[in-house]
Image 1 (tube, rainbow, N blue to C red):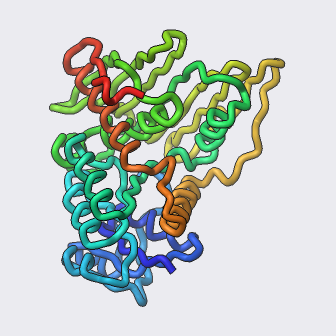
Image 2: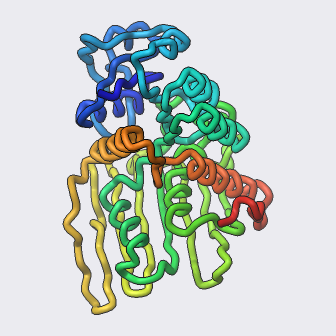
Length: 353
């Protein structure tokens, strides 16, 4: 039985707590929080833009820690699940790795590439695995697209456009602080940056235009440059100030013999799939593949099953690897630099694959 300790009980900590209950061979054995009410099981203050609301939890049999060092000294734990604010990811993850635990860290891996590389290095030194919670490839529509790209069932990838937009998340303190949460690019856009990295590799350059809020990008449109000029990849992402649509994610991905189209949003508090995953094939058909449940919490269950399987086998994850997460963060930082400078920004050759 894989014994897990969750560090930080906010929205993602709660989602992980619920998801682990559906992963065979895994048990949440401990939690860490500085909030006495949450340690007592009162999670009603937790809010998010999808999934269930916070509620009272039965924590019977779960060890509860007020100090992180005490949790890391718990020799019965195999995996530390870090759900703290991004500015704390490096310190908590490195400490957990040095204590001999594997680490699953929520995205983004860190707020800057230097810290991300330090985390990857610490995992290698400790001979433990570092996973980063990029859950989007485990959502059914994105999983289908990734499989199509890897198997080549529709021919070569030609490009795509990805969109991820939210209303202002007023419930998240310090969302626009570059030193705490990092703003929409690092917190939100990084999902699609990671997915683009999986599908197309690292770009050579980006040209991004957007709006700033303080020192971070609020909203941006980005065009990515690849060696093959016919490979056209772009992205729209960020915060808009209209709360009627609290969330939207969509993509249009072009292959030689098909295009994949998908568009989902939450409008007036209700889920609305404007375009379920559709394959527009070369024969003129519009096919709707049969997919697993669209409940977004199911993606987290699949993600955590991947973590458990990789720990059991000793093999790294081809999706959740810390180096891929570092690449995604690099993409976001280059987008931010391009918006701030108003020009193309090139990637360092070492970052390009």
